[in-house]
Image 1 (cartoon, protein in one colour):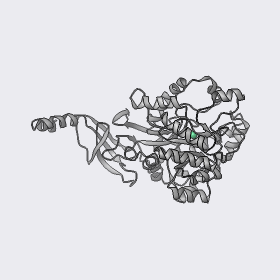
Image 2 (cartoon, helix red, strand yellow):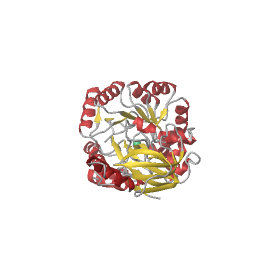
Image 3 (cartoon, helix red, strand yellow):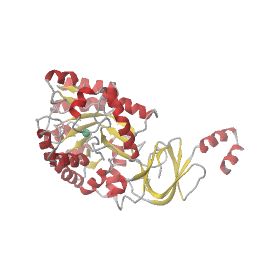
Length: 427
Ligand SMILES: [Zn+2]
């Protein structure tokens, strides 16, 4: 208040500064890890937030008026999940839902899942595979402040070969044709067309399926599906249009063919080998391990009354238990790791369970936090916006009770969430 009076007497311009200053929120952080890249933790800090952005950070507790008291909490940047599917949760109803739900239904399904994700401390997600118009509507609704949810970087539907993992399975041929997603392509030229149109209709990034998948009811294994020519055409076209390309890939040949084509990141990466590791490092490509999905499908497949079909259950038991080992190997060899859960396989809002699994795979707690902040931001090309609490960044700030460097599972119990300066959850 004292500051306001002093400034208003100075000049007309100062009146404007005063108006701006009046909107400052002061966050008192008991412990603060502002930049996970260094991992430095400081006690008793004040974060100034103005117009949705971090203005500055000062030692000690300062400011009055709009003060958020997190003096008993550990404060860190909003978390980033680079692999979710916000419009559903997998279960026995999947096959029927595909022929009964409309795109409008899917978008509305996503509303509570988006909220649950944000409340769990995830202020940004990459949605890597969901119906185009539904996910774009959800993304844009959140951005416009009509719906509560994380910032969404949307890939729209996955791009897949005809008959490949991103096609549909288990229906009559005529039904299959009727409900096929629009992003199927065969041959390099056709794939260029699909990528261009996909970006035309709203994709922020491109997600392809380079190999078979666990949860598609297809008895076609888990290895390479697109040819090298197709992969090259997809990556070149997406890059020329300013988009990153990430690939769902389990089998070795598919992982390596995609990385050889210049791909930016691999989701899952179950059967990566030494050549994959070399390619990852040459490209500076990220691995998004999704260990929580591996753990979840393994759990399902091991149940005597599992809802998975025999074909799917077999693939789940093939892939699920191997994912921790693959991540360990990649991490030890210096492959960059970005945090991703494949939530929709596991329930939305439980994303932070991935942290403990990453630590089980050999990451230190700090490295696991880096995966979900600075690394995921770099992977998604949003380092100038998210991943750190430093001046100029979006004010995406979360807090937990216990220091996650001592107990990584404390991130499963987020007590405070701010996204772009708005508080969504308070202790
Ligand atoms: Zn997925």
